[in-house]
Length: 444
Image (cartoon, rainbow, N blue to C red; front, side, top):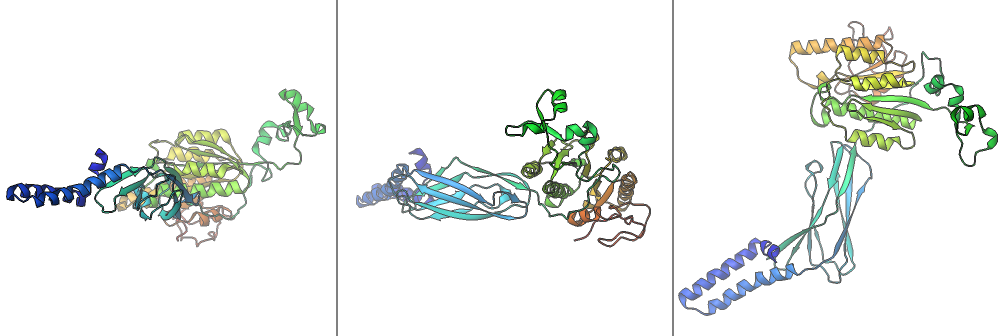
């Protein structure tokens, strides 16, 4: 009842104020008829409070988000289904959905009378420009009397969590092979490390033909092992993502960090669809093993919630690269110190090694001297990585990862900067097979 009294609207409070004024006037003027008017004015809001307070609607609410996986920048919709589970029909219901500011203004609906066991649904659009995890709800229902004198708000407890993933750009297929290892593109490096027997056997499973038992491996491991001679060899790789706050510039969806995460998501999904078993490594301590059949959802979930880390050095992530020594290595990195660049150059594997080197200072406004110094250091890092055999993809504002990825499959192998020169046109290398020294990305 107290909650209902607090729910009196401006109209209901005005009725009570008019009743009080009529009562005072009746005693002051000696007019008993005014007391009857005052009683009627006071009775209406009080009856409205009693009616709303005694409302015992039993409502259920279910919520569905379409599509189930939302990419940043893409529209989505939320469908609400409200059902009256009580035997008493409802009045007009005012609904309001609670939304975080990033999803827009909270939508409001008016739902007509629902009979017993009747349901109705409403749908509203949302659009998210920034990846992350968001919580939708709870849904609040405002109950009111027919005269609008009292209004009571009740909330459902159920909420819905949605994950907005980074934008994923389709990438073209390019040759990814061990250019110095002498291995076939699909042969894992674990074959070299552990021997042919270990790579061509697996544990016995119920239903396997006993004629395929590999007795030598069985004796060595103590477990029954069988040959898997006809199964294709796995392709292995590591994707490193630099999320350090100090390595990126800009804010919001247009920052270099968001460009890096979106590019890493595109590359990871592309490689998983191509059949690679991957390690997704970040400077913040993430080291996730991803399989082609289920790794895409895991990777997008990790990258959706990745935040700018306060870690100053890329050393911990580089240590993982040196220990993995996978066939394929892709590094999406921001600003590097000379020491970090030298360690990354030394971490190159015998297979394909691609560095998406982001010129983060291009996302910031720098004075002339600072800009020239940043450009010089960036060019030195590109040259150092290229000299170590990396395929360097220079990324600056306006660059598209789809175009840069295609460059990694050309004979020039990305960017190898050595001195000044005009900018190479999109999709074509410089005459000496190197890219121009400005290292600019492909403009939109």
